[in-house]
Length: 416
Image 1 (cartoon, rainbow, N blue to C red):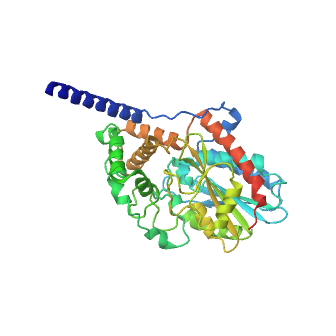
Image 2: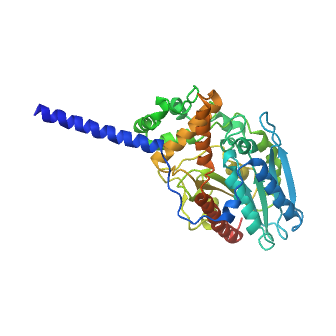
Image 3: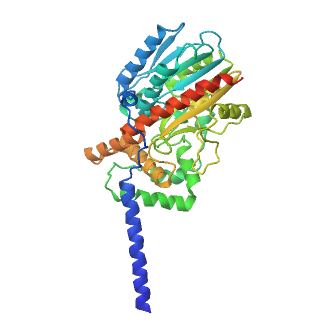
């Protein structure tokens, strides 16, 4: 009997080891399937991976618009940098040509490394949606590369490690926010040594993260990590101690423009969160029922997560809400288009996304064990926010075209 029990225990241990080994192998080789779509060369051509040529393409399309419409304004706000040159937040404003009834703001690269997709969608919008008919009563403001430094060096954050989508606020109260859950995960997500991708701490990151989930639960951990924090300047999702210079420079222009229209809507373009190849309409739950009703009318059809989903999280200091707070009257509708890359709505995808983010920030803050470690992390980081997959890029353009068609058709029916 004792021998049978021993054999059973050993068999269970062997099965457990196989299961753990399989999970670790899947984590190390994680690669979600591409969307099923025929790659389209014209769609892929919208993607320009580097900041400078993407900027030039955007400026060229703006200059062409200036020849077609009246009172077109182009502006460039310089962003100082010790590591890169010729960085600008570029604005292109085409006012409503007949009657100023509504303003649409379309912004890209608030998270710099996400810029290629955002820039691509903005240029698609210029090509296909900025028509004389559409612009009769609708003004359009395109903000290209709100974080040009991050776009240029392929980081999510600014040169000061500030996440602009956790930084935007009309008051200083934001920067005193206490993210009570963040210290619980700080040892996991902010290691203080040089990155060695082969170290056991990284090989076993999945198990370490699962242990945290078992102890605290997935929703509290997701909220603690992603909400934004203001106490760890070298940590991930750092929101800063004051409004970032480029947002401070943008504020008076934005305030003047949104208040020139009784209704405004922002669409901030992001990549990373969610199912690979899917366009998610991702929103902080609005407190004003008019805002919710307006967003539901515009986006009726695709699912909007209003905070009831198990994978939902809210953020502090988001740019779309900040733009709305600049309004002195009228109605503002904030929205985010998020193009998923790593199936981060799943537990495995969420932990993989987190690990890549941890390694990238760790390397910038504390160095690399070898050039090979740096190159590997840089590649994973780019692919997480700007996949090279032709199918993924084709799907981004196809879904954007469909969603923007819906927005431009339904936005005129709203009343402020």
